[in-house]
Each structure stands twice: as C-alpha cells, then as structure tokens.
Image 1: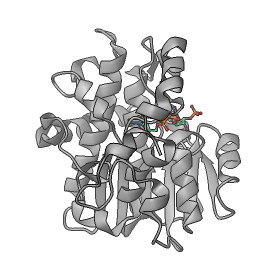
Image 2: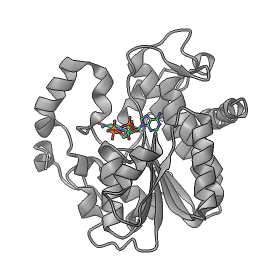
Image 3: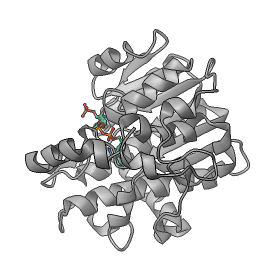
Image 4: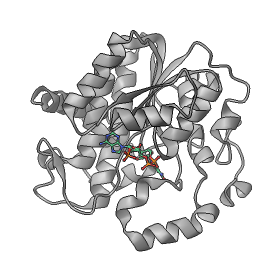
Length: 305
Ligand SMILES: NC(=O)c1ccc[n+]([C@@H]2O[C@H](COP(=O)([O-])OP(=O)(O)OC[C@H]3O[C@@H](n4cnc5c(N)ncnc54)[C@H](OP(=O)(O)O)[C@@H]3O)[C@@H](O)[C@H]2O)c1
C-alpha cells in the first residue's frame, strides 16, 4: 500500500484510492469471460491482465510485437493469448483486429490501456502528432473494428487521465493535429487523454438502447514506465518518492478493472471514474458536439490510412 492510501477513505461504491485490483475482484469469478487489454507487457496493463487471468478470465493481451505480447501472456495463465498491436501503425492495428475475429473471440470487455506520455519533441505517424495517434487514433481503429465482437453487454474502458485537464482550451485543437503549428508535450498528452474521454462518452451515446457500456478512467498517479520520456532527473525523483506519493501498480490498476468487470460499475455507464468512483471531468469532456466532431474527424483520418 502506498503511504497516501492510508489517509484516504472509500467512496460510494465501497472502493477508493487504496483499493487494489486484487481487492476489487476478490469475490468475482471471471470464468467464461474474454477480455482484450492493450499494453499487456508493462505497468497498469500488465497488472490488469494478471488479476483478470487470476480470476479466471481469458486474457487477450496486446503489445507492440507478438514476441512481447506472448512473453507477457505466458506469465498470466495458459488461457491468455498474445497479439501484436503497434498502435501507431494502422496495418498492425487492422491485423490485430482481424486476428481476433479469425480466432473467433467474443469480447466481454476491451480495455484500451496502452499509451505514451509527453514525448519531448514532436513526432508523428501518418502526419498526426504521435501521442494523439497512439493513444487515440490507434485505439479508435481497434475498438470500432471490434464492435461486432463485443458481447451483448460488453464494456469498453478507455484509460484517460486527469492530465486531460491540460488539453488545449478548445479541448481538441482540430487545426493542429499534426503539431506543426506548435507542440507542447503536456498539452499534446492532455489532448490525447481528452480524446480518450470524449471517445468513451460518444461510444456510450452510440450504445444507448443496448446493454453495452463505455467508461473513461483515471488510474491515479502510478509508478510505472510511463514517465520514461520525462528525463533522468525527474525519473529518479519519481523512483525515490514513488512509494510515498504515487499509487502502487495494484492500486493503479483497480479502477480499470472495476470498470471492466465489477457489477457495481454497470449503473455508472458512460462515467469518468477515478478511485473506482465517479468524478467530474473538465466541462468540455462532456460536450456532445465536440465528441461528435472528434469521432467524425477520427473517421476521416482513418479513411486516409
Ligand atoms: N502511470 C500513471 O501515473 C498514469 C496516470 C494517468 C493515466 N495513465 C494511463 O495509463 C495507461 C497505462 O500507462 P502505464 O502507466 O502503465 O505506462 P507504461 O508502463 O509505460 O505502459 C504503457 C504500455 O503501452 C504500450 N505502448 C506504448 N506505445 C505503444 C504503441 N505505439 N503501440 C502499442 N503499445 C504501446 C507500452 O509498450 P512498450 O513497453 O513496448 O513501450 C506499454 O505496454 C496509459 O494510457 C496512460 O496514459 C497512467
């Protein structure tokens, strides 16, 4: 348990800052469930997969390469299967979705966890700033391609972040998705996490009238490899202070697991969750017109790839 966790109380769901993914699933059997998790080889994604598999789920874990995914999945359970899904490469994303369909998997949940943060310099894929492409466009492609595989009451969970509050004042800077007109690492990361949130909200609107649900979650500030681009000094500070100030990886995996499998999450459909409870995102993350425009723009980008 992290030091901060000792001072936090649970919220209305009965879970809170200190809950771990192990505790969230303590009374659940996930036998018969199939759950797709992107970024299965590191940090939050790896812990999410471990816990879901331990409770009986068949985990489909993706990583940038098949080798990385297989190596990680081999540590979860013999029901786990690895798939290559390099989110910045459309061909790889399409091949991943195709392989999951060919293998005949029907999905109880898709957890879009993989992500990159605060690249120090502007990088792009297919002319689009790389954090927006990897964190949003890659997942948009994967999820929309797999919607037919989602079971009747399937769930989609987007790993967003409180960093969505650092997105540009317009929410999404549609006139600068390339980053060519100016690039700030935190604003670009924030924009990609705002996009994850808007995508979950729009998915939920499109699920109305079905039993399918979508959530965006903030996992907390967790000691993982995510800070790898923030420079050696900050990385050392985070390593030193991590046990005191940051969530453990078990605590950081709890909210995504809660959203994906817990019965108490069902009535919270469409919510933004943190510490396994509902919180309010920045106001424009709930702007329908913005979410619709993002969906349409994403479709236009994908059509060119
Ligand atoms: N840690 C935090 O404090 C925090 C806070 C808020 C939100 N989040 C969100 O939580 C999620 C998980 O982050 P984490 O902290 O667990 O980070 P992490 O340990 O760095 O894990 C990120 C995962 O994403 C994968 N990934 C990165 N780029 C990819 C690409 N182009 N294609 C496919 N996979 C790719 C990584 O693969 P490689 O190992 O091969 O690079 C890794 O498996 C992210 O979406 C992040 O934005 C984290």
